[in-house]
Image (cartoon, rainbow, N blue to C red; front, side, top):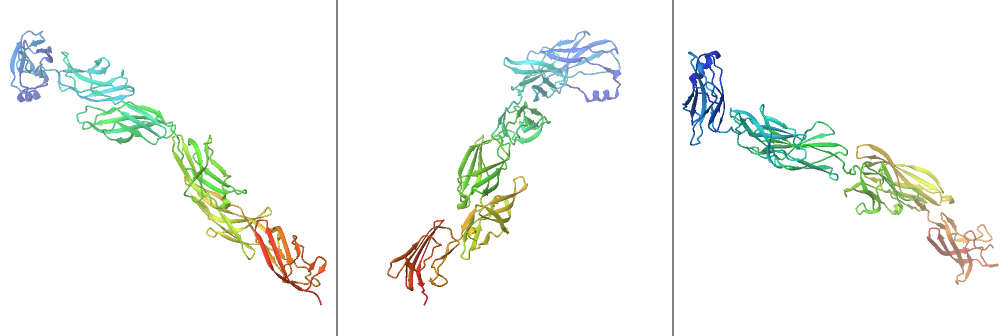
Length: 578
């Protein structure tokens, strides 16, 4: 250790010029109990001796142990049979009146004090070793050791500074461990301090979780432990930055939210508690080859085609990696079941159209949504959409009353409903209703025999908002509904064969007939007439014989083309002229 004795001497030195001082020998070191020094250069007067002063207490008092009278001698052996710790300094004795002799550094007979490692930090595959300088003044350098398979071996000696870059390390693939010992000119070294080892980081890609799993060896042997740890990341060649702070005792972390195709270079940086020393791990670089999940899958439209089959259209992100596509259907929007399970198309189209050949949109609302299974067995579901269900009935006024369910497609806002009518293949628009109105009454002309059956459908115009906030116009068509006005029979209560109404027959309007039968009976139940032709009437005869005036019974049975049967019974008055 350095030691300058005497406050008075210090004050004198401050006022005396440097030329008025007698230089002490340059005290190099103590090996065992032998002191070594370099000879001083003093030309102020004759040499007398080199004085060796010693004490067992660093603070003194010091006594003169020996005077070396040989001006060329550069060592002194101090007998120390007890092996005690001694402190020494040297002084030059020259006959130089008026000049003050200087003391050398104060050294002891112990090895140099330790030079604790501050950090070992990875740079590529190299390791930067940084240590705290030894407080021993005799230290001339530092020996850096690395732990190897054959033991701890010295790899270099540093004479300037307190850092060393080990370019022969392989810290990118293995943990490297180091020691640093202080060295003096006698070859004495400090004792070994605690070993410091690099942080070894390993990582693996999780394609399904879209993350990187990191694990590392903790940094050990900082006096106060780790104060902070952080994950540093550089993406696509950008300079690494601190991405997130993690627990100081953590040795594993999952780096989230990867983007497919990006290159991530990651390392761990630990900071010592108290000193702020920094140690970095090796860096790992991984390309994010991740499974692209379904994002923003949504039903674009549900409509019914002219064949009364439901048609579902949906959209999704085209970069998704899907293994299976399921089309789900429901009649109540709660209990869905798969009606189609198919492998995913490759590549994914922007939109997909599916026609439900088995669905019956003419029987009620049908709900649809899409479900996908990706390469990670993760399920994803779309928004839902349903068909518009059109209902109707003929009224006694010969009008047709139409009603329909509201447009029900998630994230779609209806603007209007337009009603279309088809008669014998000719389609016309009847008009448009407001958003809140879902009924329409169509007047049917009973005299128009060709319009007995009228077919209708409704088209909703709506605005659909996509998940990305954009909007588009859609049109959703209902099922086609055909309404046949009920058959109406007008039966006269009398006829006069010799008058104006010469035959008895019913007037049939608004009906499509598949079969017809009219029977006439007298009051005794004897059948007088039968016909299967609705245009053929009864002329009041039985065969060729005219029947007398009176009341007769009729029975009419008509089967319509839709299977409905109409039966009429009653009496009719047969009139004869006078």
